[in-house]
Image (cartoon, rainbow, N blue to C red):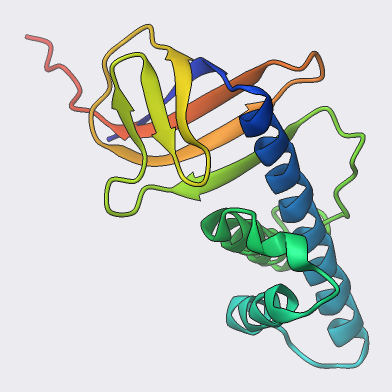
Length: 172
């Protein structure tokens, strides 16, 4: 079974800037993907995740968006997967049409996957992709980490939510 565990993290100034930049890049990629899918729908075309992911590659290579190369590539792909899931939910009438993300939204976060153990807890630090080791306040032990969501609150606090595997206790 999977379980979400939330811990507070204490990034330094450089790591805070990188987190904020990644949040902005994920928001930009999501909004560009949403705009492209809306225009394609108006023209009677269909865009899926694989086509928008190919567009992301072109954006990263272009001179217009050089800052996308500094952000976590997995987080950018996850934002496009979230957009695709939003459209799936919309067409199955489980949700309303996806909306553009705003810079002024209180809920800012990005998700990255654990590939080849690139997210792990070492003592009082957690290793995150592109950020390196970030100080963490860990209140419990965790098992295998599937993915991590890095969140920033409106008050400027940072949290990491880890999706971990755990074995439920059998009650007798």
